[in-house]
Length: 172
Image (cartoon, rainbow, N blue to C red):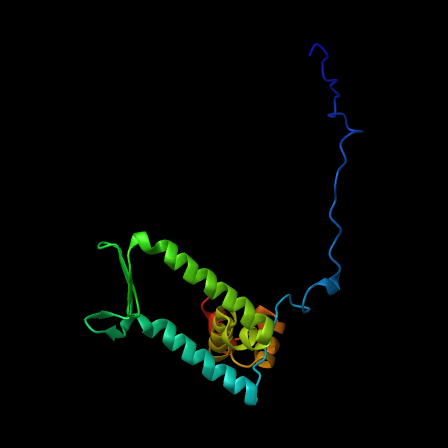
């Protein structure tokens, strides 16, 4: 290994290529003001989605307070190193079993997604449930999308304090 690796100086201006990002066209934003205004949808399937979302949120927030005998239904007792899920109690040495149960649940999720993907994504997926919950709160706080669009379209100097949506009054 007496041969040396040839070195090349790349610090000269000719060797360095400068990148300038393309300028944004005015039509690249979702709207002229740069905001997305989500309108509330009504109908039979939206009502089913709303009711299923409230049911899933109630299960999510209420499950730890449901008792099973003398303890909660779902309880991770870290000090005693016990994990109680429904009627089963898992110890740290049982994590291989819990791992296999979670792998089976993941395959079940994949199967449900293949068979009824739109039902899962539209009605039961946690991301969809939380998104629709935030949209529901946004409509209750700000108002209808056309009203919010009209208010934010006007200049801030011409808007009286009481006309702004509540989140804009707070400075959010």
